[in-house]
Length: 528
Ligand SMILES: [Zn+2]
Image (cartoon, rainbow, N blue to C red; front, side, top):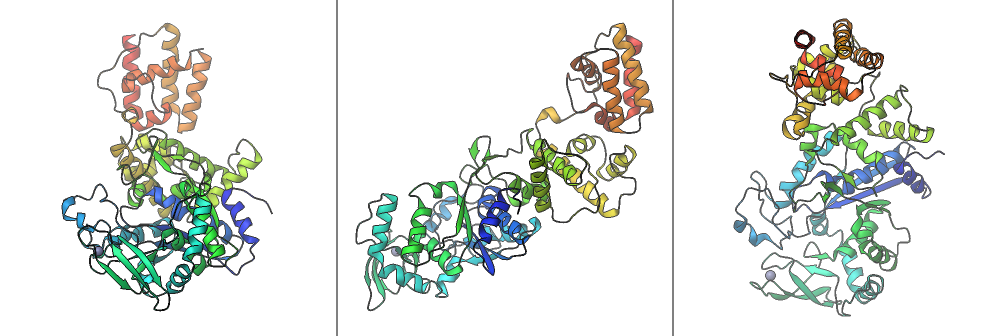
């Protein structure tokens, strides 16, 4: 069996387990906005492994654990609320705090609804599982009892593996304070016969002390045990998470030991540490305020482009994804190249890379194109600055970029991509990519040789029928007249857009419109 990318390697590793059904997990605390950085580690990485395994005809399910029993630690940025009105909810489980956004009942619901709305648009179906509801339904009562019965052993394991200093009396549980509704309690004693715990609330405004059954949503396991309990109950085969959890002696190691020693399960989920998505060198995080949401992404890129990003980069690779940087274009170019390779129009540097691109493309697409057609993002970026969106398919047909018999569906896809180019240009693109036909321009002084070259270029512009043919003609003329590329193209950029450099010249000329380009070049010749 041949391996292609990282997801296939994981799939093949999992096949050794020889199971009927494979279970993939991710877990997220809905205390703030979900963004594509969370999406990578908690949804797309397990999804990628699952999707690869499915192509070996295995039954797979993906659970997305909404850890809404986890607490709100701080008020996220960008909520447009008076923070002091919500400060009382710090320390509350997300499932129990009031929604900070209108139209939702709880804090958790406010942030989960966006995920539920947009993940399907990325072709991803997961089972959303509320951790709080699971506890409340009593599903983890057994895990709570096992953990409290084995509390001493848990402390031993924890201290040994994490080199920690938990006191012997530590109980791996947090009681939900019945008075102030916060998880700010410390469990004191496990009264095993009565199956109750005594606890004290550390909230200085509450200080409630009491004895309570830890079952049915009254208490949450400490999250390292909580994690192990989930692996045990759902028989998880794969779970990825932020790389910080995977450090030696970190939470993954500790949770694995709990799974083995406390829950007596010898097969831990295969885990993959996932690197961060960064923006300008900074980790994408709600607290930094540099996040890209699932819906915002769809305004600049397709679902397939984001899926591709997750397949082509190993999870251990940092992805630098600044929408306001020109590098964003490179991602499009890479995807477009993968598409050409997939359709056999191009080959990568070597056979292995060719296979890798083909496979990444195949796994990324939501619907296989019946044939190859492609409007490069960089071309659209120029056209949308001068043409209406619905004119673009016809223009590209005339220029032989697209087949002349585009179906309505294919045409819609092109317009959608053009719309994304326009949105990106208006909201993110660096100024250097914005072009205008120059009203005034620095007139280059041409020598006789250059003058002849420009005359020949005008003929080429008049006679050419496609972007590719025209671009090729420019290179021939430049060679024939032995003019340095920077100088040759610079002449055109000078007079057309008043810059020294610019985008692909042939595309620019068609975007600006050939008539006015020729008129401008004739003016140049007349005055030279
Ligand atoms: Zn309390």
